[in-house]
Amino acid sequence: MNDRGSPSGGSGYRLSTTGAYHRDDLDTLGWELTVCNSLYPVDTPIRRILKRNASYGHLLYDYLTRFMPLEKITSVLEIGGGYGYLMKDFLMRNSGLKPSMLDISPVLLQKQQETLAGHDVSYVLEDALETDPIIFGRHELAILNENLGDFPALIDIDPVILEEAPPSAGDAIRTKVHRLFTAYGLEKPGEEFNLNIGAMEMVERLCSSGIPYIFMGEHSCEARVPPMLEPYISIRSDGNPRRIPLKGHDEYTIKFSYLQRIAGYHGYKTVRGPFADYIIPLLTERLKATLATRGLYSAAEEVVYHFVGDLYEYEYLIMVKEGHGIKG
Image (cartoon, rainbow, N blue to C red; front, side, top):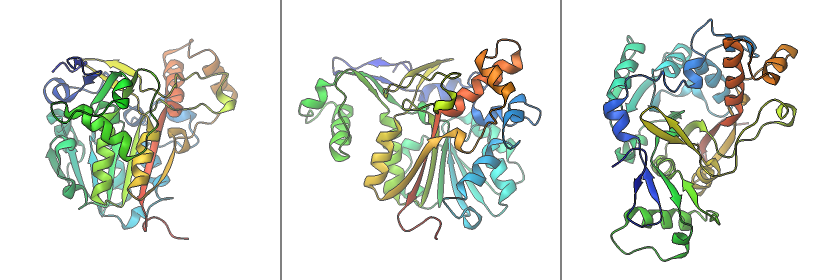
């Protein structure tokens, strides 16, 4: 299978996957600098434009305490943990955590072991879409940060296939698409579209396990810029998952409204918003000038410009199983 998208033999879609790249070819995340990684260095210029100068994990930890009793949680599962920086921050805040790191990439799993050395952490090399959901249910919190776009996506789908009866056999993917749209009452696009089928399956598998708390964050195809920043930031956001070409593979932005619908069906309350809800930029006159010039005058300003845009193009989704969460 071609990781950049394989023809489907006339079935009305193509499949894009990244599994082979992450298992066999990935050797660094330097080609795709994440929000988490970019906030990790203490001396990075982007920390200086924030309301609170801190690394990603600390900012996320404090935000999540609004929705879940993190101080009482011990068993946390991070799927696709990158370099391990997020979990390192979480362990600094709660030494009682017993994390499990599940990753498809042997290179990244090794990096996580180096970052989290000295802590009581378990490591599993596995594709999360092949993990038994019973395993998910043994944890209290699941985290998937900035990796949903790596999950399989169907691209260039002919909407006609949604109007036709699914094949009885021979095209499991097409049958799966019919089931997802029918089971969750998803709005059917009227023209050719892309579908985050892997991310949708992941949410379905996690929610069916009954795990109390779930956090996900990634580039969104439904993101919006607040009115006060519209003169400075432009985000392409038409509701159709967009291809992001990267070294050796493609990722796709996420249609979070579909994920919300799946979570709600399984009895989860959801909170959704931009990363800027917990990574809060201070809109000073200097920052406005940097945004207005698109970071033209220095490398540091260019980094800041793109980073602020990411804070609004990335969305998060918090899922809390009914009967859990913060009381009162």
